Image (tube, rainbow, N blue to C red):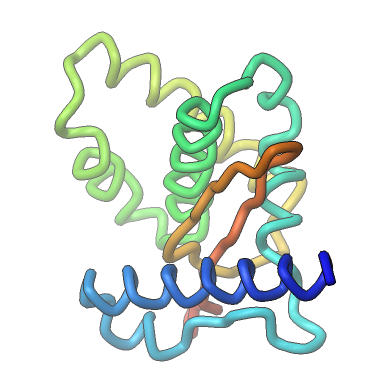
Length: 151
């Protein structure tokens, strides 16, 4: 019974991610979105491993959403063509004040280096990350797509 409820809630989260991506108008990337295909890496597990050195001081749902959001930005920057990274990061950080931009950019640079070092063979673009909380734990749902021409 509990497994059935968990599966149903998981499917609801995945459907919500798909809706968000469609509303955001990701075009071709959205069409290629992978939602738990057979034999493909489980991006939610990979993203959790990716942020593992940073997770200990993160306790609240809001903090976890922020961390995983930054992790997705860094991950995506690392799989983009090098020539597009600075433009992408400027766009993502444009709403922050200068001091916050510098601190966030430093963390993103660390995460990009981590991506290159430990996850360089995984060429998925993260389209959306949802972090939800139950009474006992957090759940991470990730929608991703394989880049057709990864660099």
